[in-house]
Image (cartoon, rainbow, N blue to C red; front, side):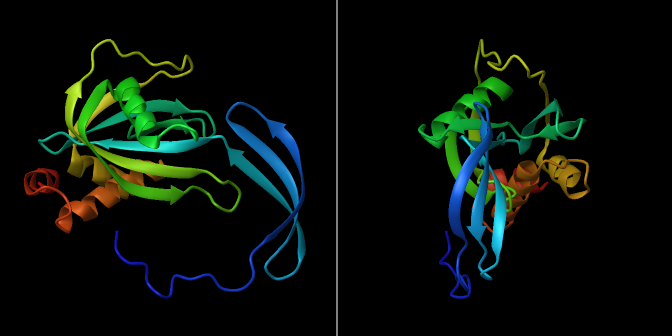
Length: 204
């Protein structure tokens, strides 16, 4: 990771948190209503969605430059979404262990090489959800892997990296983590941060 530029520093006063009450909770999220003082000094009531898991994203790239995407219906927008394999990992678990599990469950794959390439705050105005993204290479099939979530009906497709990137940049793929991971991997391939053979295969 490059050195942090000097201009990337905090300015002004931070938010101050006051009394909080939980208004909803389930095994995945907790919604809190919190009294607060804004950086401007103005009083505020803040609604915060707290996530109990880390968001994990895996970009599986085969040696020929193709990537594996998974498709499923997503409840919040009521539409169908093609994405890289993603899931949640308990915060007490090593993130890489969760990523390995998600890749096996959703894509039926194991990876010989793992590399963390991205950390993102997702919708940081109302949630504390943190995402970690991994590049997975040296892929092999895993036998007998089944989805553990009985609400998931997942399809799978293997496409050239360039096609997945085009789908993301043209607005056909809307999942934020998928778009970010594909762009990050493209940048790494262009800038020489990936093995030469893999980068060439991705950029064809």
